[in-house]
Length: 327
Length: 284
Ligand SMILES: Nc1nc2c(ncn2[C@@H]2O[C@H](COP(=O)(O)OP(=O)(O)OP(=O)(O)O)[C@@H](O)[C@H]2O)c(=O)[nH]1
Ligand SMILES: Nc1nc2c(ncn2[C@@H]2O[C@H](COP(=O)(O)OP(=O)(O)O)[C@@H](O)[C@H]2O)c(=O)[nH]1
Ligand SMILES: [Mg+2]
Image (cartoon, rainbow over all chains, first blue to last red; front, side, top):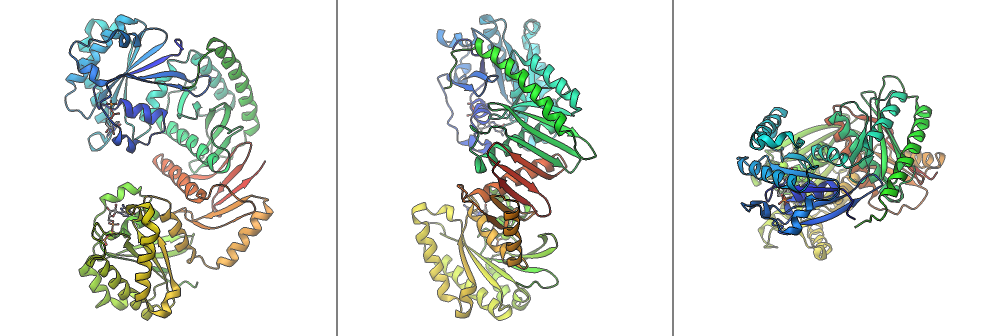
């Protein structure tokens, strides 16, 4: 069990940690998050084990502990940052007017955690950037800049030693999925390999964009090397949803979704194609063409090649990860 | 049913707060149920002209339900409102808050009586749908009982010759009943429904499809369907409609729309294509 990578979620009470993990990994609808019970005092952990690539343990770190000035963690709690691969996610409530407390807490966590495990990386989620206050992209960026500057200022000397990424997120749109995709990707050692495979798939079939999706969570585990366009990601993620929903009606649902495939022709000439490539894994490709799409055979062939490569990657990984289990 | 040249007139009536504008917005404007909380009361009559089934024009008259407006409809406006009308949709709340059987219900019944009498006079061939609405507020165990009571109460005041033109349905914006009810309502607006049904049956057989469903293009209400095999999921039409609508919304966000799509796995194949808007299912 110890070598399953970990994602530790930290942040003040009510900043949205539980909502995030339930929306991303347990299909909670964002509006239902309003009825979540707050006031966790104990650490809660659950395992995510959808396929060979996406295996992790998610730790919901109770906000109450952070409120304690000295951050005096129990010995057991302190071990949470140690051992194996681990990413720390620091959630900051962007709708909370003064960021001073959340930033200084975040700083404490970073210092504390780095002492236990110097290899840790951090992701700061500037969360709840939705509603009237954050209607424009500029507002979000502004908020991100403020928090970024404050935190780097506070960390001063430490900042060179650790990597921190910043994301603006909300559970009411795709931003949380996009950010979490990047977070889980850090825990997939084969990611560079997968990226190479996807890039050559893209080159050989002249795609616009290609993603490897975990169909359960709608996170993408790898993509080609072009910059990610949020708009394509949204359309592709929604397509994954649609395929599963329809499979639940006419097929046998998620578990027996073998050879799933889907093709969308959009009015702007784009073609989206989804193909199942492994248990709960699917490739979604975007083609931009003005004339009719005629690359089916080429694509099928190249996807077969990719599948083979994926099979080899997963096989070597599952040897390494024997003994893991579903919770 | 024949259609008049300048479109198909549908009256949406009922007392204030019954949920008329809410349902209209959900069905025709893609509102999510929760967004209806923001709707303002309707002032007098709100006219909407909608294109439906390609070239059919649907004139929806959303009649604001406050008492002063209602009285106006049955007096000075009576002819204007009720003539040339093809469908009346009368909406009333299944259970008015807490104190049942008080004046509230009486008013519902009284207005219904006025409406159905005016309709029989000015548009004798019109069809009436009564939607006993907000059933979600009634406890599940009591729904059938409440529904039956309201229905009986209303039937006693309806003129005899109008009675077999009235269809009662229980609805709520929080479940699939609304979609089912409106699918039934629009079915009466389809010109030559028998011909269409025959076509769909033929198509289903020719394609050797397990099922063919025709959806209306904008609302994704089910117009008609045919199947050659029993389907396990009885809520599939509402689900499908919702799924496709959702994706349409995603596409709109990206400023485009889809032309057609195919979804399949080793057990089935579903095809959604425009114009005829078909969903077929095959076993491979
Ligand atoms: N619980 C519940 N509430 C509903 C339902 N349908 C509508 N509502 C709510 O009822 C309220 C009034 O809805 P409207 O659609 O504005 O009512 P209306 O009939 O158009 O009212 P007027 O325009 O004044 O005649 C809104 O807050 C809706 O959210 C339902 O099925 N269940
Ligand atoms: N507007 C908005 N509210 C959110 C978002 N994420 C979570 N919330 C709300 O924040 C509150 C606290 O969330 P919760 O997950 O219990 O916080 P935790 O104590 O950090 O686990 C809930 O009422 C959520 O509905 C978001 O992205 N936007
Ligand atoms: Mg209204």
